[in-house]
Length: 196
Image (cartoon, rainbow, N blue to C red; front, side, top):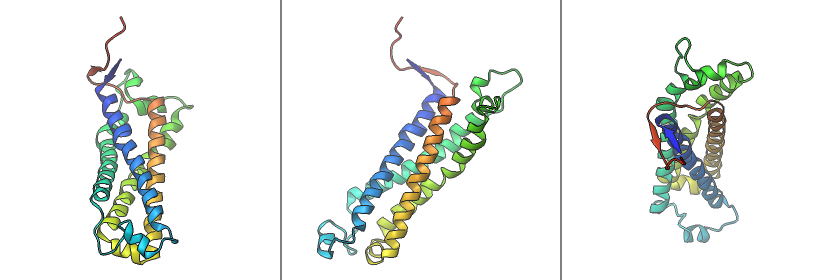
């Protein structure tokens, strides 16, 4: 079993950074929904560490920072590394399998994967880490406002939901497009011994 350099970088971009970001966003949503519980009394809130006077617990701080870092790593690695490989212009007579965008656009039945899917993905993906960063910032730096104002809690929850939805759309389109026209090329790495 072997993988090329570009395939490996694409896996790191999507499965490692993007996958972790999506899972971490889901965890943040669960945390926010738990904190949003209007039935919880003030003494219950203080018992679980939701006091405006206390900073966020260390594990939450690390969790939110890792979540934001994974989101930005996914978007920036996609925009600066994977996307230029995807969008490379094929020379005349080249094997289009090495030029994913051109491969998709070469057939009317697959052109929609680029014209709709990739065009949508490349724009919506930026929303996810922006909204996720806002969520983390409020939870880490403005806990008193979070605890004191229902409107702040509702807004932060909305931004977390938008970040999750944007990450799902971008990741879903990315996975489907990479299945249809994978980014390939570069040095090959042997992951497991051959069966010969």
